[in-house]
Structure formats: structure tokens, C-alpha cells
Image 1 (spheres, one colour):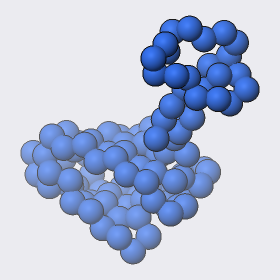
Image 2: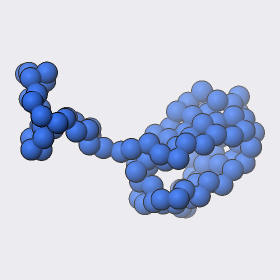
Image 3: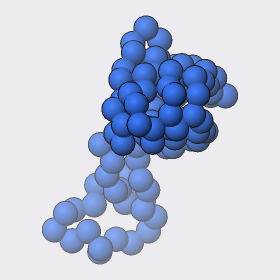
Image 4: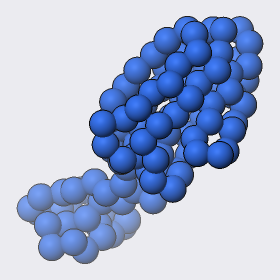
Length: 103
């Protein structure tokens, strides 16, 4: 879960979230290595990823595989989930998609 913390790492109190002095840091996943396409694609990331996001902009189902797990994304759907560490995703599609890894 993403949350805001003060410079010393303490969570910002929800009763007064704007009364913060010092640096505010966001924690959580970071989007990286965006890519897109409209045909079958195997993407090898340059770094280990811990999550994946894909948007199906096509008119037909899209399937992607990470490790041994395969998922189907319906047209106009967005899929976002955490995974065990991985470096490769295989996408099977006949339509357009947009995607990126999460670290």
C-alpha cells in the first residue's frame, strides 16, 4: 500500500495531512520500461520486475504469460498486479496494447 511519510519515516496523520515539515516520500511500486504493440510480443526487461500493468486497447482478448502463469485481459480492460520477481513477459494478441513493468 502506498502511503506518505515524514522525513524520519513516520506516517503522516490523516487528521492533518497538509501539516508536514521536511521531505515527503512515496513508497510503493515504480513504473518502468513502458512498451506497446499490436502483435505477439516477448518483452525482456533490463531489470527484475515485481509487478506488471497492461491495457488492452484492441477489440479481442489478449493473453500474457509471466513464468508459468497466463492471464486473459478483455478489450478495454486494464490489468495490474504484483508477481514474484521476473524479467520476461510474453503477450499474445491481435490488437493494440500498452504495458509497463513495476519495480
